[in-house]
Image 1 (tube, rainbow, N blue to C red):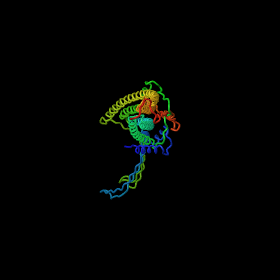
Image 2 (tube, one colour):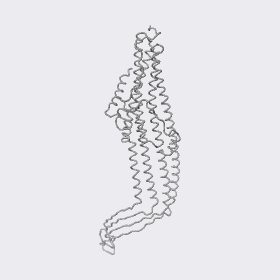
Image 3 (spheres, rainbow, N blue to C red):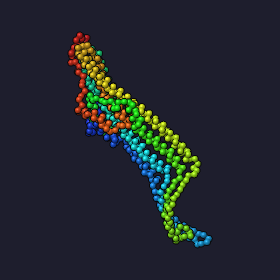
Length: 464
């Protein structure tokens, strides 16, 4: 079965996506586009705006309240002491109340202010999470591109080995086994290329969905870049910072303070309330005895309300608030522990990733030397074709794994700062400074070509 048409279709799709009019995309531009188009950020922003409106709502309960009312009614009165009467009564009034002492409403205002701060902390966390999501999606796309590039380079090298094996078999300097091994390896690489192209399209689509527009050409990581470790370098500094400054911890702290104030608000429900009340009224034909009479009235005074017995509701609500406060304290400690563990895992993951990068850099150099040695051995007849193919595959796989490890280190560095609550746009800008346009990135060194066709290995005998 030939995979050529399918590979061509997938390659055309990938090429079409890369050839879109969209400008080259770097990490900072991806972040700005995502900030403007991401639905999670839009939802959090709308939620913050709604929460902020709770402050003027709570303050309104402590400000003067003015209302107006009017009543117009047709009345018919028939008594045994006077003739029947049919008249219209009219009453107009304006009422005013001004709270002088309402402690529960004062606490509600303070709670609403804390809820606004909580909403800001939630929005800050969503923005911080977006930085990590954008970086993850960006580098996942680069990793998928690298995988396609690696497989294609491996495919070209295997194709050269396959052609050489066929020519050498024809002239009798190699066996059919060399040709069959190269053909099997080539077919496997074609299948891997199909899967890699599909994965690349999936990653590009995910990034496009995040930034709200088609993805053009991406800036790539500068070759040979030196990655830095965590600063500060002590794990304890990061875990302590996470327990103190992590956004989830800050939200839990604010929620705990809101719960504490709820206890006070329910306790203050026992207190009396004092309001200034007043009204201005105008009436016409207010009763049957005053038909044709107009009257004006005005009142002002103090209104006192004292809750004497409420059936135990105040005590029950106070106990409920105390229990919820205890729950919030437990949730706060749980959040602190989770933040501490997250910082520890991110710190260890970053250090492990840096160690893996150094090991893969050494492995890349060793794999290149091994491939050169196998190519030389194949030319002089002490190595066979499968040895060269294995060495090529090892080199290409090492390069791909090295690129992936570098991406993971960069994302883990951002994740570590996120767990500590210190991640911001400047951190993303520092990572973006490590990227360069594709045109300015030097190409990866390629393996040496296979030996010329027809060249006979020393000690070999013609095919019979």
